[in-house]
Amino acid sequence: MVPSHISEEIVYDNPLQPVRVLHEFRNEKVTGKWHYHNELELIAVVRGEFSIYTKDKIFRLTAGDVAIIGSFEPHHSFKDEGIMEYIVLQFDIFKYIGQNLISYMKYFTEAGRLYSKLNYIFTESPEVKRRIFDHINEISREYARREKGYEIAMYSLIYKIILELVRSDRSSLLDLKNDSGIIKLLPVLDYIEKNISSRVDMQEAAKLMNLDYFYFGKYFKKYTGKTFLEYVNYKKIVNAELILLTRDVSVLETASLIGMPNMANFYKFFYKYNKCSPKEFRRKLLL
Image (cartoon, rainbow, N blue to C red; front, side):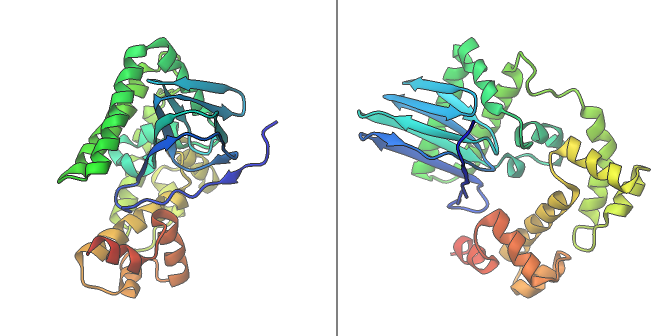
């Protein structure tokens, strides 16, 4: 039985770059607490030994090894005394995958799916492990240097990691046989895009597919990994981010422009996706 665990809130340096990179050097004994988070997590061990515990398996890593932990998957780490260097990459795949690739998003974000099982890929294919290890290393270097265009480089490397996992999954843990379900949702996704600045009605969306309201809700969650309301609110906040960065309007006007006039709700959802207020977001990115 898994001990009690906590939800860890990942804070990004740049709200528009939903990734956290930690390059850690440890010499002391460390026993982490059970926790989980919304982000996918990859760990690359540069030197030393490191163990990751999930609810049904222990991954013992040494230099050159890579491990993946899925969204919402409880885990904790352990290292004994001795020099240890490792890189932790945590990113919100929901913000990296656009509408045209939404069918892939579900397989990385759905709560309850044990993505740590994908670690079999690294055992079966040392070449894939080496390439992903190199990608994580390069992301860490780009993040540390922050040279012009580093955001593009990191974005590209994260996509390469996702592609490696999808193409190397010989056991079909990332089952992508339901693309037809996403195709049927395209009119709904277009409806959301066209009405994102006003009221987006789930009943109207259900009518576009000739589905019952409650069945439509289950269908949408099944093929996107998000509830209809979660998806709509996320798209509204993305729209708000663009307005805050490109238009000289107040926070109140911004909330109105995205069809979320209730300021309490606007602040709540904005903080959920950016871990800061709209004013802090604008101040941080428009220095």
